[in-house]
Length: 384
Image (tube, rainbow, N blue to C red; front, side, top):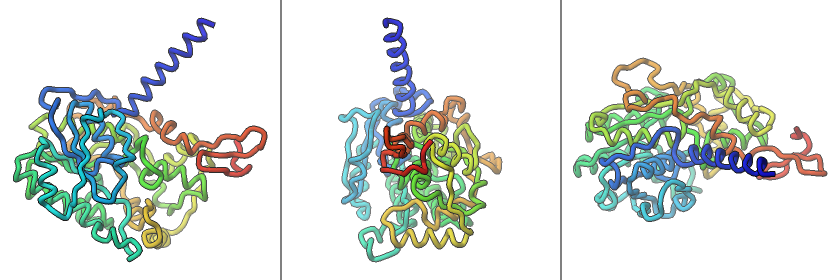
């Protein structure tokens, strides 16, 4: 009995350590240094999949957080700030159409991080409140306005872009992000630009997280794809590891003015990711396949009829492009090694997805012979 108790206690401590390694920030050691500890950071876009990892990581480095949010947006209340002490977090409601309010919320900060994102574009009067927040406003105009204020006040700035940002891209998001990078470089030459690959996390919802959305669609009807996107290559990276990269970049003045492309340890196709999610959740790896033009029409229909969806027209356009860091071998693009980070310590998807997708796993209901998840009954055809 004593040996059994010791075994389970050891197992519990070990699982808690592994869970905290994933839950808090990532596999990289947080740089708790005198030049960051006690400093103040203002993180725009702080409650999204990536923004939450950045906030947690900077908090582990000893920084105080100012978290601006829009009026009427309650997503910040749902943010699981697992690594942040409550007294070090200061949410501030801001009207982003008023530069004076942006300047006021940035004034106490020593560092600025822009991680603003938007999932879908409002196209119809049914969503009139969101009409002022199109892709160009979110990904270009607002970051450039923040960069101008940061330059005027002499504050270091990080702008989170995306791998594949190109002024000639067919994707509106990638094209807009490329324009934002150019304009931010013009107004704030010392700005740090970080382009992550696909980001995975523990706390995202199925509307915004690629992997949870994949599990959700497999539960229901199958994942809607066009055949060419199954071969898309990416290097998914944990949100907390990107946050630690931000901390390393901020603490070293030599990193200012540089552009980084950061990915995870695994290079994997979208089809292999689907197989991984299928295995973890015990779902059939079902897909709903359609031609590329039909997929774009399906995405446009989703934008017009759904409040928040990942399957937009721009999503299917972006799936044409690989998400591999510095695939062109550009000497002006830097990576993990330049930040002094050992890539072998990055979090793997296998470490995080089993916990992130727990609610999507199929379980057998005792005595009924039926499969179910936390999202409802699936019927006997999903038994395992």
